[in-house]
Length: 393
Ligand code: PLP
Image (cartoon, rainbow, N blue to C red):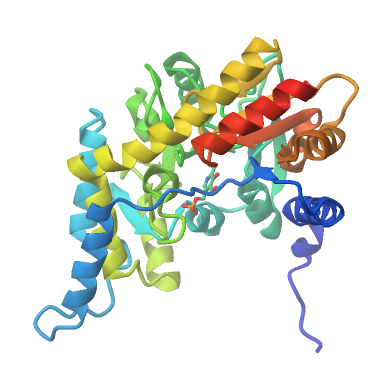
């Protein structure tokens, strides 16, 4: 063909991370068929969805099969009942959002990937290490990316200190994937002040909010001025086990504007053109999950994962190994012993403890020398993994 393709795709990192992990695990298992491998690498939930949520889907499916209650296309921005449930979920945490600020979607990944559509060629600032979607979506659209480096020195929480005052788009994720680190009120306030002073926009990924323990912000809109400089993207994937059902939401305060245009209106226009809404049964499921009773049920799974995370954190603490996460996050980010890089320590643990982890370098250059472990396996397997680790670390 003689058409021109988007050359920016050639600039994407070849993301071999999970295929490389699978290849190494498969090879090891083939050579050691009797070994029971424990997977602490996956970033997906494993517990089933609460009954109250599945029965909402079944009821909605029945409504679709009845002429009196059948529904066609959903509204592109979500049914009002779903937006109500998001608004009330925030209200229970004393955070004010309006239905007009809320856009229901099929998950945070789509919104984070698509939001680039509504912006021109801004300078993009992304933390490193990072969830790769922010980098890849900006690379695909030819944007200039700068990194905000996370390290042991800043506990993997980069701050705006030293940044110039040019307007920019900044991606923050707290609690963070992969590091599990979490911004405090003061730290987030610092970012909000910087964004406001420099005329920048923060895209705040709140996908792990439901894991937060203690007195930490559950939303950037808890911070004074947050509504004037930030978009928040969130998801029911980890909050309610919706990775297979698909539902999330983006909150764009109607206060946000640039060049005299409301950002909310731009996204509204974009979604109306390129998105046809989330299915009715899934929005009913989301409504159930976000209700008071639903949140309580969903928290049971989260507490289960957090118990696993705490077991892992206690182990690394007892070994005096530096780590972040494990308290308000399903992830633990651990420092490899000096003599190993990420892949070497991955191999050492696979071959000697039969545990699969994720090499930190797969999340960015600043992840070199670290490993990510997840709490999404069973309690029993997590205990066994720790017993195995005790023998080799
Ligand atoms: N944001 C972060 C930081 C994630 O880790 C994930 C999923 O792993 C997502 C967003 C995507 O969530 P969703 O399943 O809603 O697309």
